[in-house]
Length: 220
Image 1: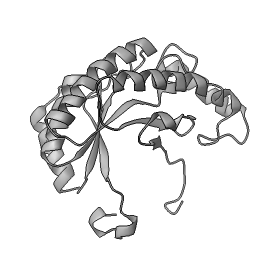
Image 2: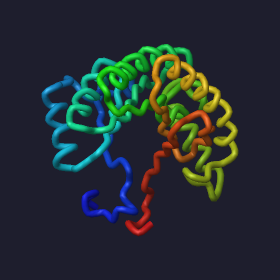
Image 3: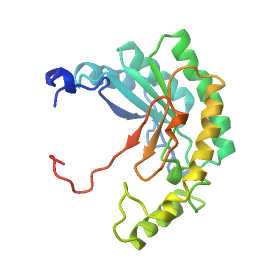
Image 4: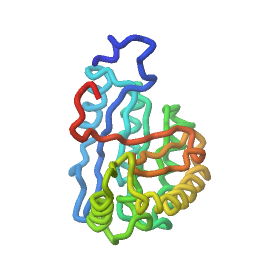
């Protein structure tokens, strides 16, 4: 539905898309290569004026790419969900990475005037080390899928106890990452949670949960 035609009482405050500036899923290269700033600016213009978005979530590993894309988004009036994403990193590695990213995001927010929301991570149970068993993404997802298959009646939104038991690991990590981010970033902070993750949302300013369709009808 076009957000311009939605009933006012049902219209979301922010309407947007996810934009990838280069993620490294396997350690073998970026999902976006090469990075083309002219193309990014074109995309931002289309997202704002053709798709009529009011916000964009920009995700990627290289902080310099995130900053350039966020500047381009700000120039066309988009609110920015700033999502620095270093995959398969330890808690300490991610903390140090977010300290640097938070400085860059605060510069955009306080000096450039961008409408910024900082995401400290995305589905850390499978994309980061230390929450689920496994040394890499494939091993963690395999463990995750095995637990779902072993427990009858389990779903992504109603996971088995073996998965729920890992919530303490996740929330310990998130407390560390939020604390690091707040050292430099003064705007609202959120997290992109998997629907199976039981997050302590008191740590955050905005609740953010990823939901994936699994055969539901349009009405559902």
